[in-house]
Image (tube, rainbow, N blue to C red; front, side, top):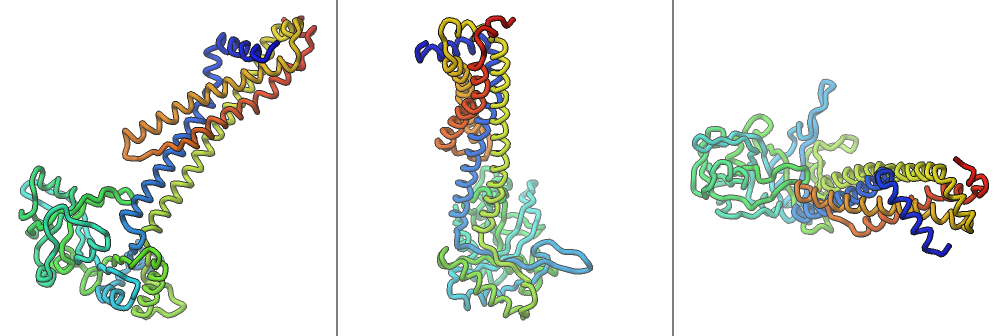
Length: 410
């Protein structure tokens, strides 16, 4: 037999059992496809998170109140009102690595225009808030100093709120109500899109912080100088860690926290939030990759099982080949090639499934999937390796058959 004969015989055998060949490769198809899809989704998540960090700014931080502990119960994050506007002013004046400081109050409210209403989040802010978050205006103007001081009833709208309350209109200059209090729209914010946690950042209304406290939100948690949290923008990403240390030391001093007491606040930077999400996505990706790998192994075992059955079914055929001069290595080559071809067919179909699934996911969902050519090559190569590994034993078994006994086999 020449070098090409085992390949021809293998292809002929696979073609004569098309359905069995296809079913045998299912495990490989699913495994390769799953590996490519999981890597693509992971790459998309990584790119999305990096884009969010760039959008938010790696030098943006947030100081939040602590938790309330009492009567054996632990409150939600921010349930202990400890931050004030004076804290924000102190950070601005005493922390040299800070560029912008923006105290914020936050609450939910019903906003109404005519017979249209919308439930949204209200932020009481200063103009520094927009600078700290790199958030511009698509139209309109910022709050004026007089409006901030006089607690004027003026509002900036996120794009989602503007579209739902003023469909087909430019809301700038028009009136609306927030919790039944009349306001004049002075600006519409630029589109921000989804946050790193899946929320709609454009579903907000911004009003002066003094207006929020006196006319809209109020309540014990926001009385006096208390604020919900403080946004901070450091001078650069390189000084974020140092800025966190300085803010922590300053607030511990201002809040008279002794060395053996826990902080009554938390300092977090945006990159930390998103990197935590990235770690979760990475862990889930590794889990799914493990499942996909198991699928590949199961597919390999299926190939080995079918090849062993094939050896039994074709014992007489093997005997005939040996009787006309085929050697053990020729028989082994034929069966090993069949196993590899099965794996490669599964690998090709798996690549088609993986690439197609990734493209479909990007087209029909909001989740970006980035196909990595290296992952495609590795998944396909692994499918070939599975064929070789799980095909060796059946091929070796076939090559050891005795020609005389094989010819007698019924």
